[in-house]
Amino acid sequence: MTSLDPGSGEGNGTLRIAVPNKGSLAEPSRAILREAGYRQRADHRELVLADPDGGAEFFYLRPRDIAVYVGEGTLDLGITGRDLLLDSGAHADEMLGLGFGGSRLRYAAPVGTFRAVAELSGLRIATSYLGVVRRHLAAQGVDASVIRLDGAVESAVRLGVADVIADVVETGSTLRQAGLEIVGDPILESEAVLIRRSGATDPAGYPVFLRRLQGVLVARRYVMMDYDIPTDHLETACAITPGIESPTVAPLHRDGWSAVRAMVLRERAQQVMDELWEVGARGILVTDIHACRL
Image 1 (cartoon, rainbow, N blue to C red):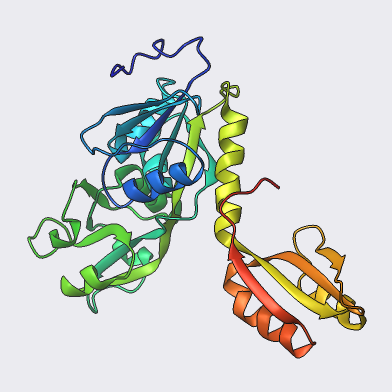
Image 2: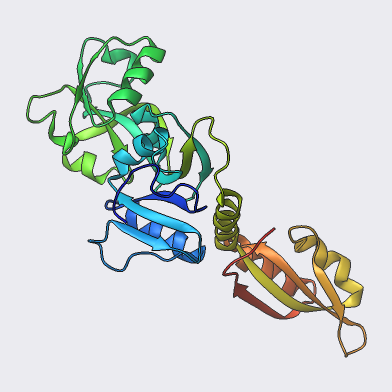
């Protein structure tokens, strides 16, 4: 099936999901879907991939178009950037932040020329995010001319097309190479998001799909920590590793010792191991969590 006809999947309970076909969101989107147990394409030329076992069908589309397809109800769900969703003006809502593709949309100008957004009145601003920038300028009371460019926005000032740009910034190295510096606070903080048509009822299979993605996000944030602790120090150790609801505790064959298992934030794992060691824990092991439901 290659059609985007909204009726082509009707009645069979199959979720129709848009996935970025290229760009910085493409591979991380496929990765999170694979971790959630869904098939993903092996050949980048495939435009549609069916996963009957997962109850889903994936359509690989330009990231900028995904919000439009979802907003029109042609597809049930989509993964795109928050910046692209808001810029599109589509009738679609963000349902879940996915924790990758983080970036900031910011103004930038030649070094030493402007320091605040209020100084941009009357200037020409080049951007790929026409809708977002116009709304932001209006909210700030700034009357400026906004020019839409689809790529190489950082060259617009040097080529005389604009006085200022508004573009996605990750490290800022591209701006520095173009002789530009950031002006003012971020316009928007973006990341990859799961979107759904505004006001739509839950399509069949949506709750399961959402739980799977949430399970992956939790599994990425946490590790499982196991350790042995003298029972006299058990309460102190459990305070260090409270887990999600409560740690699992079991007596060891060795008198006076207990085994503890708890989920711990991945970023704090090394610090927690040090703290447990200081209160007498031994045999401290950390393992990855590949999937979960909480």
